[in-house]
Image 1 (cartoon, helix red, strand yellow):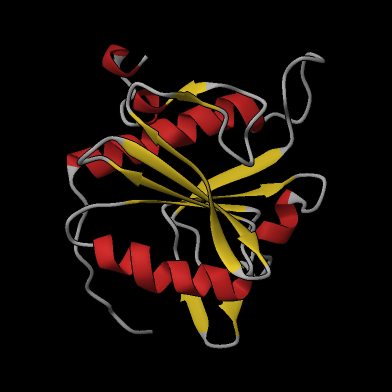
Image 2 (cartoon, rainbow, N blue to C red):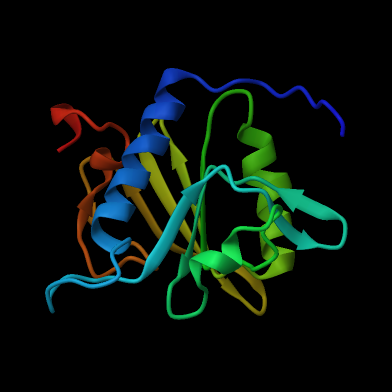
Length: 169
């Protein structure tokens, strides 16, 4: 019932968000597939998530393991089932919010995996939740090829997460 203004995103942010979503959905969004193909995730963008009674956030991307959650359970707004993975893409207007404010909220809620993509330097930082808070699981730059939790079954060159054109491949 309230209009809340927020800073818009730039092209780099939108391109990275689309690229990560396409990569994640193409490799992990299937219900079935060949034996050597990982499956079993619901991947979505900009979903309103209720983390607790007073906290609703909308991560750039998030995902739930199909083994734990059905698509129908994700339909109410806001979604009240904690995601298994969230991904935030930094831009000049949201950097502090993603690195400090949202990260703190995800940590308190115990979101198992938290990714930060920084288009300005083409880096990926992966955090894993632990009892003591988030621990750094991986940090990669554009030319690195990584296996990033929770999607470690598939290698990806970090630069491919930032653009959906041939330049990223």
